[in-house]
Length: 378
Image (cartoon, rainbow, N blue to C red; front, top):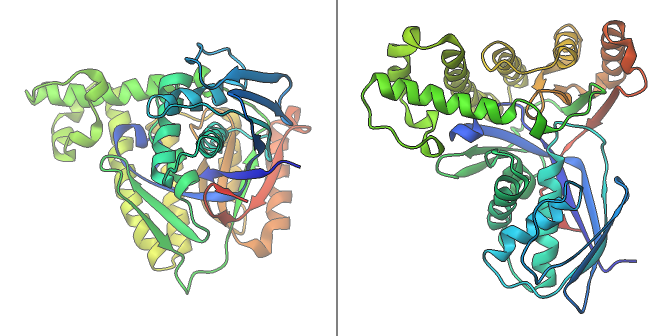
């Protein structure tokens, strides 16, 4: 048996969709399903990894400069090494096995895996990292090595999450709050409805949408004669909503819609925090639904499959509300549900979805999970 075991949870984000990369406000939970990494520290600098989820065997030297991406699951370990190496000298490797518990897109498994590797390599090299540092290093690995331009939401939920608490993160200041469940709140669980469509974020329109949001900010600033910054330093959070409203009718509609999503989602997160603090799950759920509507119409993501699941959720008893999970191009929908009605929810959603998409009968899945603590040694 391995000496060490890290559990790194997946995450769901009920409110604050597609705004982290524009420095918006986001919310999320860590859940009780995720990635397990069992490992021993080696005497030398080799990293030797096997996966119970993917085929192949990964080996590299942690003390050497990081090689370019290889295009396989070992890239996540190499990415963690890359981001840690910028800060620390690494000399001890690990030997381990990694396993994911849900074969589902949209729960941010990549961030969970990266966080597990960052924690393991830090442990092997006697580096002490606070959860916030783990999250920053894993985020850097994902952006600079893996090449996905996302914000900090995924890593924050996974590193900082706490059972029965809603995480609220301000992606501009990186200030966060963990808000406990109100005493009067009814019991809830999280339903995950997997469309059966697997996806790669890198090949979806994810990075394109990020660029469109930045362009929307640029257009407004240009109309207002605000000095422009380079694209990589331009964010919708820096543009007051009043400025956007003055110019929205002159903007190309595509960019106006992206901005509209950002500002409306900002309001929904603020309201959602009040709903959560007062124990009002009905209100919180309705905001999550409104978030999904805006994702479909203003942000324009969501495959026909995901939209079908979302529409099935709207007419199913026992679901407070929910939306696409993750980037919303393929993957899964998530919902806050009444635990007493799980059985009928599963039946209903499955029936409604497979009536429209019978080709997914072998790959469509329903899971129920609870909120959980963040990544940790078990």
